[in-house]
Amino acid sequence: MNTQRLPRVYQARIDALLHAGGRRLLGLVGAPGAGKSTLANALAQQWPAQIQVVPMDGFHLANATLAQLGRRQRKGAPDTFDADGFVALLKRLRAQSTDEVVYAPNFERTLEEPVAGAIAVHADTPLVVVEGNYLLLGEHPWNQVQALLDEVWFVDTAQNTRINRLVQRHQQFGRSAQAAADWVRDTDEPNARRIEAEKSKADVLFRWDAA
Image (cartoon, rainbow, N blue to C red; front, side):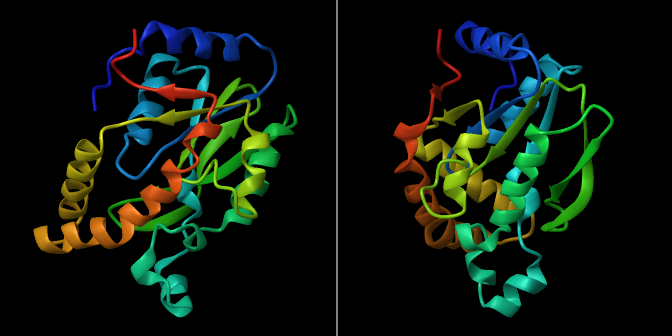
């Protein structure tokens, strides 16, 4: 996805969040391959001193844990994350004191594992951008997330574009072309349908081709 400057309509919303005073949290949600991370990074590049990105993917359960639970082949589904831990982090970020640094986990794709304490969020950062698949999911405890965010943007991308990106991503990190296509069909796309079903809850529908 293009990392060009945001269309003006979205820039105005970011400016409003930045000038609202205090800490604000913006959620970026969308189906796998929609470009949430690309958008989050574009925002951080455009406002480097004012935005910190915190990905939901840092709350993936470890591969060994998923194997013990019998969920390794469904990695990426809602029950393969520490959702309660994610909610707890959002609460800390909302209530962060002036002398506190909150350390958030990240997800290392080369390892396919979360890395604890990889992202330092400082108290004077006015806008934290949280990106992930399940920010609007209606199931507990995911249903607590939206109330902890000031706005949620749904990143809307054509299905063919998304699927092509996903297949390429899985191949890039070691799967064969057939294994990548099978994973997208059997794992990513069922999750995508659940995410798309919650689209109407978002405050903003984000498209790069907006005016």
